[in-house]
Length: 497
Image (cartoon, rainbow, N blue to C red; front, side, top):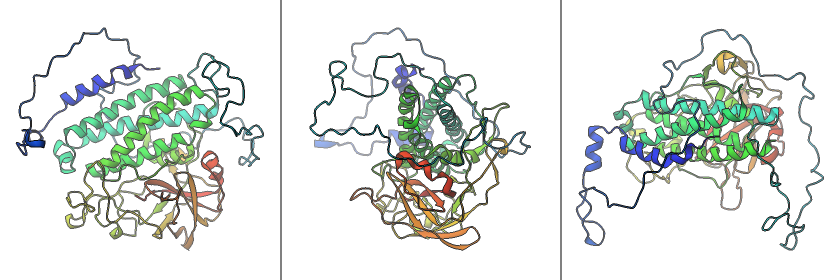
């Protein structure tokens, strides 16, 4: 495991000082708007030298080596589709498959604890230590996967960390300083993106060490953006399935030790998702709870953006579902999202997580609109007068047939065991809310966004979430949401707020 966190603050401070600053930015950053501050006291105009504080030169502690040098890391020279012929196809398979699906069972017979008096019910094994818990008996932790479920879950997480490492660097390399400025992002914002890329080198190292010698390696990727706005929008979508994809399996892991370290890394992922929402001009957090997704959902989201991988790359066992294209998914760059076209033309492509197009006319754009309630430039928070979606909105779908080649080397194939879809399932916060799906043709249909609340005062459907097209309305909860998998005909990524 890595102890690189010891130096995080110093690294970040160093990057902030060393960040390249364009002439236009320097002029903006040093301009004194007013010479008088609060209570009539003049604002600072001279900076440094700082006051002296007591300090020493400590001996640097040794650090565990990372699997890739993020500082100075160069994104792959090629980012595009795979044009070769796959040498193998389909998900990884075991010696045999025991059943077509996991059968539902009764409540766990040992799940009976209930405290009626607020006092310990059993003797304390040690002072200040209540009875129970897992991994609390003093045994030495082993930070390695302990089952096939653990292995393939963490391998999926590593695929995600690798793409984030490359993706964050690619945006910084692809776009100029002026491109970022035009999108409202300064040298400090670029430095933050660089730091998030550095975080991914640590995350990739952590997961690699917990898997061992067969851990997946970094691949080559195919990205869907041509502007800075599309770059940060794609990032807020990709980090959503990166975060939710871990919350969905972390408490099912056999290794509690692995789950502990994974939680400490995914907490960072959650912050990244919020930051990219802020850079996209979206509300940083508009839900009370974040949803957890099964592994096959996040793999369906991620795989289309992996072009090809090294020879003998570890293959994943998870399913790839057909895509449900949300034809009128709101364009986040419009001051009036209701004006978004209804033919699917306002996303950059046909893949499930493709961002909103940003090349709309200036009179329709909210990007540089400095009007409260209407603008969507980078900000700590926005409160939009016209939301991206609302209860009762008609949502249009068009879904793919199974059997499409996707993922690394076009070597995975989309599949489904579901029948004709009859419902749209909105998976948001703690709930799966079903809405009837009206079929309008071959692989087309619509539904209306439900008016649902998690708790009173918390509109359930908000943020960036997954929508499933299912053949039944199966009741599921956050801990057993994967039970719906056999009934999923297709899935889409919905930006509701």
